[in-house]
Amino acid sequence: MIDLRLLRSNPDFFREAMSVRSGDYGPALEELVEKDARYRALLTEVETLRGKSKTISAEVGKFRAQKQEVPPELQKQAGELKEALRAKEESLAPKEAEIKNLALCLPNPAHESVPVGKSEADNKPVRENAEHKPQFNFKPRDHHELGEKLGILDFQTAALLSGSRFALLRGAGARLERAIISFFLDMHTKRHGYKEIMPPYIVTGETLTGTGQLPKFEEDLYKVAAEPPLYMIPTAEVPVTNMYRGATLKESQLPMKFASYTACFRQEAGSYGKDTRGLIRQHQFNKVELVWLAKPEESMTALEQLTRDAEAVLDALGLAHRVILLCTGDTGFASCKTYDVEVWLPSENRYREISSCSNCRDFQARRMNTRFKREKGGSPEFVHTLNGSGVAVGRTFAAILENFQNEDGTVTVPLALRPYFGADKIVPEAAA
Image 1 (tube, helix red, strand yellow):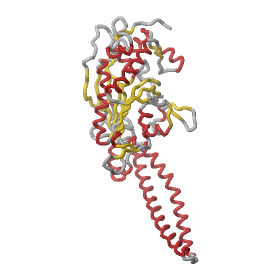
Image 2 (image 1 turned 180 degrees about the vertical axis):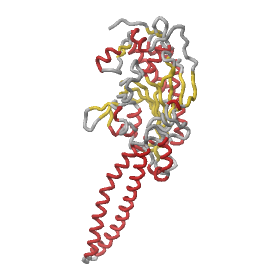
Image 3 (image 1 turned 30 degrees about the horizontal axis):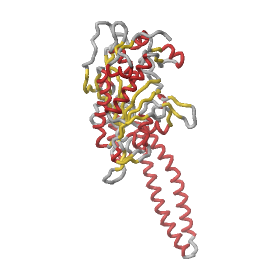
Image 4 (image 1 turned 90 degrees about the vertical axis):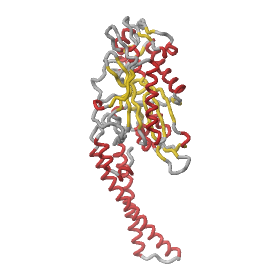
């Protein structure tokens, strides 16, 4: 959530920040500025009335302490003040809630280092590792065709069970998925210093509000029938970041670094017709998520390290990739700065996103009320939160099939995965 105190002192900063974001946030911002001004004016009135009421009550108390009759005019004045104060106090809470709801629907202002732009066409390439980009002497197949011919990907049965945009993995396919997950978790926990977390897959609306999915993006979520409603997680970022909601941490506890494997569930609203084949855009998919809680002055450095940690697994697998800095119009709602890591897919002859690494600064922490207290003293401060895929498992599965395919339809298993997979090649399997 945006900082309302900063909004009051510098509304033009937010007007500029909202103008370069994707979406028309100007009217909502102006409504927030106007209603916040009214709320603060009302609050001033309430505080003035409280002061007057306190003074009158003291005068009434003096008469009663001396066992004297309270003058009728003084009694009348005290009663009128009490009634006026009650009426105005009752109107404070709904106005405050309205302001909060408006603020919850405004995105995080982009960091000054983020390029201004409207769409992905304005994103800025940062670096590329094309060392492992394969050269084929045959036309490479896409992972959908490869997986089905190998008997390890079954989209037809998945559609029978669940509908479109689901996949069923068989035999070596299921084993490859499990191997990728285990490799990612081991690399991030043993080499990169993350603590492994296995969170619930179902969370409350309050939890999703904390990380910014609610109220704005409810149409992308799967809701579980319950009262109050519960939701399937769209990413492990949601439960893991919320673990310290309402907490005040010690400075010595920061930074905190977590790695979490979960299944993720997304409606993919608005993606009709996009990536309908294969594993790129599924309603259910596996992901290893990386989450940081950091001190404000360290969060931008943490973002660089988080991104390098995500890249490291692709380097270890021998997959060509590049890093893109997203422009203001393409940066996610809760993020102030995002790097996309993209992996090479030979069948498309282009890079495709496999991880987004974001610094949310104090945007999520304000929503969750997650703070820390410095050892030197002072008031508690909001932590900065960061998250990134470390990386998407299904898209890694697809990239391995495509980049390590052989002309005979088999797939060579990357060296780093062989201890987890148990073989050096994926060969066709008999139908089950």
